[in-house]
Length: 193
Image 1: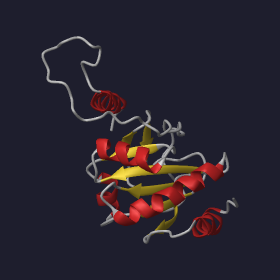
Image 2: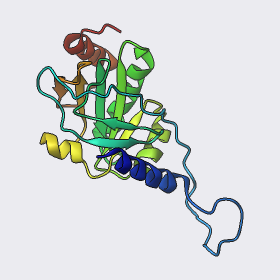
Image 3: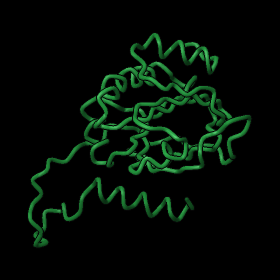
Image 4: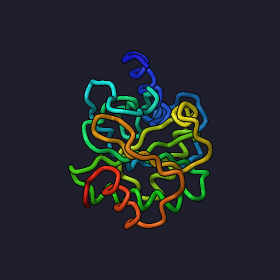
């Protein structure tokens, strides 16, 4: 996706999440009965402007983030990175996501931990992130483009990426404990938490 396309998609996402006509003036529109959901996620981090290298890499997919910014997969990450694909409709994701958030809380600057709402609207991801206490940077891939390009079915999945963007490991089943997640980080990325 081009920079112009990312900017347009980002503006559309912000308008969708923020709503329009909220300045108190009567614009003729019926008041919304849906409560607004506060975004709890951080903006996505800057990434190096370099393609991924060093082995198998993710598809070149770029997504906007709930907290602002964007994520580009198939690119260098700049730090060892964990990317957890989840959706609000996914039962195992609801159990696993708090563990991924705990990892993000522990990681500091040794490890980048990111979420990716996949195959789910941004509004659902935003609401579930708020309910689950998710604060880590989280991208939105409503159509599941990354999962489709990678040949994945169902959710959740967790990618472990080297700083150069190459895939170190793909976790195909849900993680059931923080200790298991720490062990995978140590084993596949060489980072001890």
